Image (cartoon, rainbow, N blue to C red; front, top):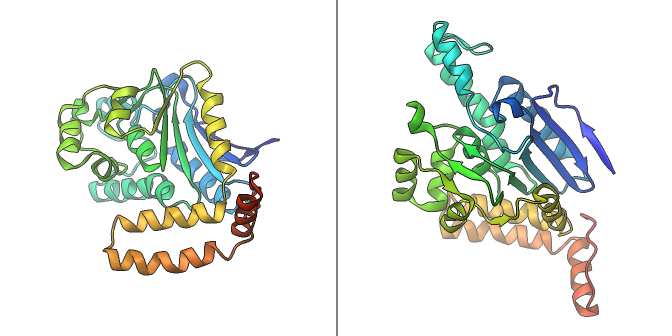
Length: 278
């Protein structure tokens, strides 16, 4: 059964399909370039899915054959020709800095810290800020035709939405700098080899295959997955002793759940477990 979540905009759509929450960039006429409305949409959809007991996994994707082209370069040019002001954004330099910081937290930080697994499904191009947002997800699935590109160097920009941080974690400092400085167009297979995407799926039926992948992930124990994500995110910032001290209570919590008892029984009985999230 599918039901919609109100995002307050048509630029970003959200729905729940079974145990998967689906968020879709929906500006296909502009390759799903970002807009103020999209930021507000994430601010509506992500908290709603965090509190929804039926949602166990979130899939972020794009309509019209692209994931997200990042910043609206056409809109940037129009604003530059009109004196530099972009609709919906403040005028002063420091106010613009504060505005961008807030938007980045609404999207990239919210995806990275979301209590549920987040999967970015790339049906096509992910560029600039759009690629940064994809990297904020926990897992990335790409269609064979997908292209990923940092793009910032091509428009004289330095990068935003956490791409420098996420990409460095995935490919290392030197490779991250190369990708930023030279902005190559990477195929899905190139991105897979570098570890930027986790799996490449056929173009035909990509949307359905990506959703099936997320449905399969949603069948696993949700409390354990939440604690796994928490542990791994923490490991990005802490030393081993801190990681060990934090893993212990999470392990005890996970093994105190009904889902753990069900999994243990299913293992002994040689059957598939049914997880309830308790």
